[in-house]
Amino acid sequence: MNIESDVKTREQMKSYWTEHSSRADIETMMLDSNAKTLHEQEVPEIMEHAPSMKGKDVLELAAGIGRFTSILAKNAKSVTAVEFIAGFHEANVNTNGYLKNIEFLCKDVVTLESKPNSFDVIFSNWIFMYLGDEEVEAFAKKAIKWLRPGGKLFFRESCFRQSGDAKRNSNPTHYRHPEFYVRAFGSVVSKEDNGDLGYFSLESSGSVATYRKIKKNNGQVFFNYTKAIKERSLASSDDAVSTFQKFLDEQQYSNQSITRYEKIFGQGYVSTGGQTTTTEFVEKLNLKPGERVLDVGCGIGGGDFYMAHQFGVSVVGIDLSTNMVHRALETSMQDPSVDVDFEICDATKKEYPDASFDVVYSRDTILHIKDKQALFAKFFRWLKPGGRVLISDYCQGEQEPTDRFKGYVASRGYHLLSPSQYGKVLESVGFTSVLAEDRTEQFVDVLKEELSRTLTHKEDFIVVTSEADLKYIVDGWEAKIVRCGEGDQKWGLFFGKKK
Image 1 (tube, one colour):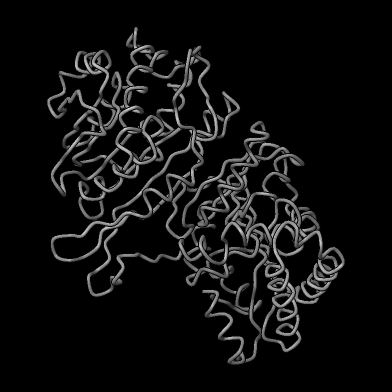
Image 2: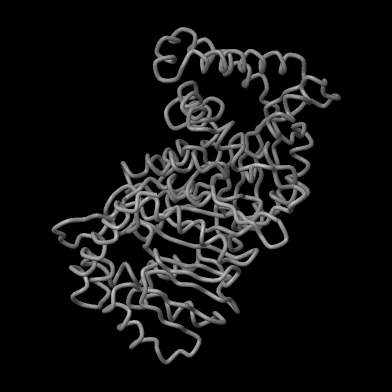
């Protein structure tokens, strides 16, 4: 660890906040002239994303003047509120000191220590952007030990660029890419007393919509982790923890893979046919301005931006791949006026209130999910009466698949149904007017067109990717065409309504 650099960082941050702590009020805390409006609208949104505090022992980092302290304490068993600027700490004590389940500490989180398994929740709203990289990584190693198994870590940071409009003589804040935090917290493990491994499992992460709407900034990002446990008998010798999310991010949807997929499918797309099939399929939804769309497996967001721009709808895009959502966020930073929000989460674990959406849309994603019936039942609940669902997905033929196809499916982690089976599952959860179309012929035509275009412009493809990527695409597309010709692989389009 670079001790000299870290000491300098702490000095810079202390000086920065000493300069901006002349008044212990909302405007000073949020460094924005519109702080009151932002505060009123973002607090309920933040708490909606945050884990439950009910009956929990909570550690609040960078508590400031107590914007969240009293809210946390309302349901928590105990709150330890930590703040290193004395003026802010005192303001919090003066405001919330009457609450007997709060302990107030005037300390720097960098030097903070605690016993293992002390807390159920660690909560912070803007702290790590004021720490150096190594300080964040060091804190992550401590936090995983402080949390009890099943405990939650929730934090929100300013990413990409500044959002507040307060004048500053200098600004040592680290406006990092969200990928840094995913890597820093996703790489730590703790050895539990019984030999099991504790690790941070990313449950959800996305941008704070309040800042997109008011400040035209999608760079306010929240992260919600659970301390998961891997049993000692299942733990690998190198302490690494493998998850399906890591498989997606490191293999199938690595940043390099996304680049090559986007090159063949078209800008903003990582699924069959790119803009062409998107335009055709979205037309079937008859979207109306103001409708709310959930895109399950949104990828890098091309279809979401198209729907929002073209039809004036509000879109929520969710995907398990951090790389995909981060790429979508990067694009949204260029035009945050478009009504699209993105979130990293597992659709099988995500919950929305009943009747939240007019449309559920999904492109070539549900192939990864085994229990499709449970997922479709969620879709049905989440849709308003009159809502529509539209899905395209990889399928298998009606006949017994070949061993070669079984190997391909297993290597990708796919769970496939035939088009007719797919339609029946949609009907089984309540959807009516279900259309289950075998679009394999169209799929093959698209594959051939994409392959021909790529080979015609292979030099351009290689410049952006590599010769190995070109070979991967050519071999992969030719293999898909063969599998379709043999009847093993199918492509389906599915539509249904909720009465």
